[in-house]
Structure formats: structure tokens, C-alpha cells
Length: 144
Image 1 (cartoon, helix red, strand yellow):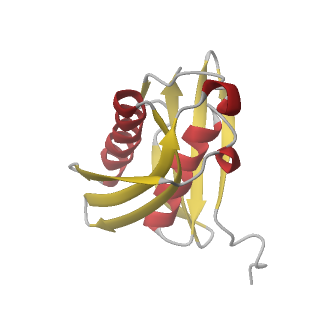
Image 2 (cartoon, one colour; image 1 turned 180 degrees about the vertical axis):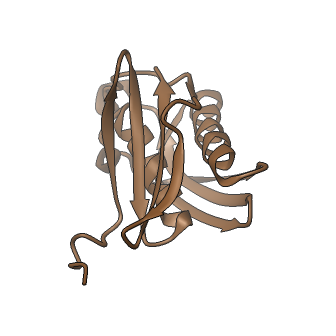
Image 3 (cartoon, helix red, strand yellow; image 1 turned 90 degrees about the vertical axis):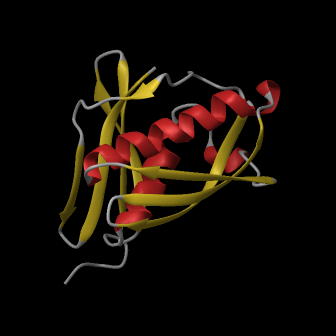
């Protein structure tokens, strides 16, 4: 039996040359995708420093779960770039290989957020979406 801490949603980074690996874990596929997006934002700034003041809707569809993760992360990167915003809240719903989400965040404030990097895009490198030990894992490498 897993402990409650082991089953908690989480995110982390993993090493990959000059780029950065992002990984989300969750009790559901949607939660793992939300945590992967949180890991993406955490490569830029502390997600806790981003206040959810505005919301943005995103819809993605792909031929499989792995490509859905890439499309999802690229949609988050696109919204951050085009709107000059950062996000800290990801309300994700997944049906098959279609994702709809509401992103909560605020305009980028360079002084307060002190962005470290600007992600260019999610890649197919180390791409994995799978259920492991009772949790969903969603990961890939992001070009920074």
C-alpha cells in the first residue's frame, strides 16, 4: 500500500544537456499534465510567486497521449509568450486525446518574477506518458 505522500501530485525537473526535463505526476492523467505545466513554469520562476488573477482557456487535440502532452506544453508556452503572462493554476480535463484547460495567472512582472529562462518548446526527447505505481507520469524535455 502506498503512503499518502507517495501518492500526492508532484512535479520535478530532470537533467538534460542544455535543455530542461519537466515531469508531472498525479493521481489522474489530467493531474499529471497540470503538474507537468507547473514544472514548466517552475523552470522560469517560482510558481508560488504567480498570482492567479486572469484566466485563459486552452484546447488541444492529438493522435495519442504523448503528443497531447507536447501539444499541451507548447500551448502553455504559446500563451505565456503571446500574452506576456505566467501561470500558476492549471485546471485540466482530458477525454481520450482531447484536452481542455483553464490557465490561471498574471502578467509577467520581471522585477517580482525574476524569470530565469524562456522556454522555446516541448520536444519529443524523453517523452513519456504512463501509469507507474498508481500514479500517472507525464514528462518530456523542453528546449530553453
